[in-house]
Image (cartoon, rainbow, N blue to C red; front, side):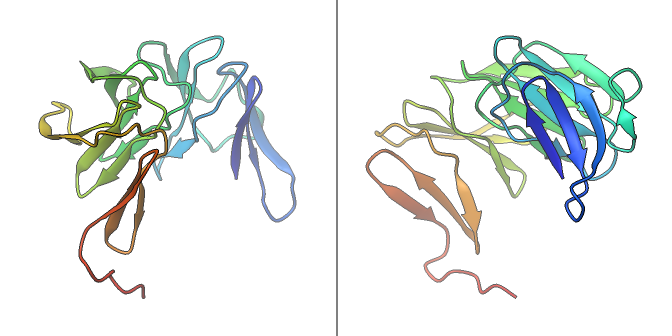
Length: 191
């Protein structure tokens, strides 16, 4: 279990509560969720009062601040929206609408793109597409690749602050006034 809090990121054994490791940083306040690539990196973004991304090797013990931070970056950092990992890339949209794609291994910026509006909702990735929902109610759908090709732009006509949800073959979007279920009329049966 990995938790991000005030000036620290910590890993705990959920069975015993024993702390495995800790890292100082990335900032005083972290709102976004921690993302794990399933292999070698834990990705953390913090945006207040400092702005920084961290990639952490999660295999250490004790205080690993000096030994297990793989890379740090400070452009396009999000405070509220959580990032996503997809096929070797981290995707993150800043609260101000700068969408960044970073190489998960090196932390190099592959591309940045300005999206309309401000952002509170986290990104989601569905079938290789990123869904970016702005506070103005604009949904921008892009290919989850380093070129960030726009697939669709949808004006919902109602502000969106909630992160989209995915369940049983459907994408759920909640605006201030409505809840939309996008997908097949009959939900996909869970196994």
